[in-house]
Amino acid sequence: MSYYPATLNLSVPQTLDLLLSRKSGSAKAMQGPGPDAEQLKRILAAGVRVPDHGKLTPWRFIVFEGEGRARMGEILAECVAGERDATPERVEQERGRFMRAPVVIGVVSRARELLPIPTWEQQLSSGAVCMNIVLASHAMGFVANWITEWCAYHPKVLERVGLKPTERIAGFIYVGHPAAPLEDRPRPALESIVTRF
Image (cartoon, rainbow, N blue to C red; front, side):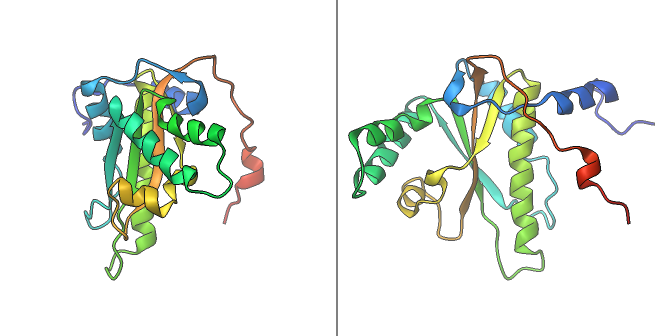
């Protein structure tokens, strides 16, 4: 007897082929269209189907699309413009950073301390959310790039996008279509990373 939903009709080989075919696409080389509202909802729904010890939901999302990407760009440009060695080129680069893809999903880790569930496990759950989003995007025919970059760690940026002092960015996931064919990168040989106990 199968305990999978009746609507799930992927075979084991198809599922493994999906996993083995996933590649990151450069955020700098993305184009539209991005996921529509229903597709994005499904991607995020897949994102939350991760191990979550204690059912703490130690993550949340910030979606940047449409004009929200430009508003984020203005925040980044302002933060960079205040630096001593900022150049006009760098300011413009930051203004366009979130415009590189049609949709950017910020995954916020909100791990709580002083609980029986270790903080590390909560942070790992946030990483699993990011990977599920990347895989769901791939399964729907999009390309995704999970990155952080400087803006994930800048206190003023985090404050301006509404993060609390106890929250961190687990990743900004850029979702779109590749502007050029994706190239695979070398993967480690399993013999070099597997031991048996």
